[in-house]
Length: 223
Image (cartoon, rainbow, N blue to C red; front, top):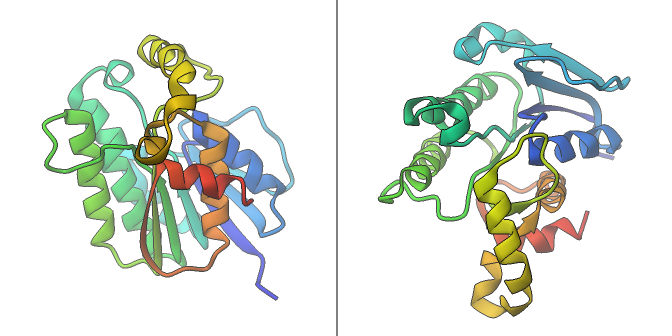
């Protein structure tokens, strides 16, 4: 029988992260769930240990971040961050620093939400940052790394993102025509991504695994 594990989640206030946290708290696989963020979430649960941290000083919290599996759902937009530099800090620096801190503890699996189109050589800044983040993670020594590249995310957000809301309205009616090679471009529910993350964590794989959006959708229904 597999031992009960500890999970750590970063970005639990976000669209995918909120679903991921909910699933982790319900899962019998984890006896403790550590959530790190800039502020406490309005959630109380016997398994949940919330830690308010300064992401600019992650290393000083290393002793509090011991977990078997790390679920990284950090992410923002350039508009919300305020600049390309601030966006890079959240979507690259914080993610890779969390991985660096985690691998010095007991962590065996690191699971991260990236984006479709991630490519360190891309001319598109957003895709390039995501690609650089992925590349840096793959240089690190974890037993298992799962990288999830969802298409346009669907779900109720606490914040308004006009561009993504517009894209959702345009893309959703077209989804039924996206079959075969086009399937990976279909919008995907944030909850499906979270389910795929927990499913992947339960498979006890080793090595680096990159999951495109159509594969994420298929994994999500297996949980």
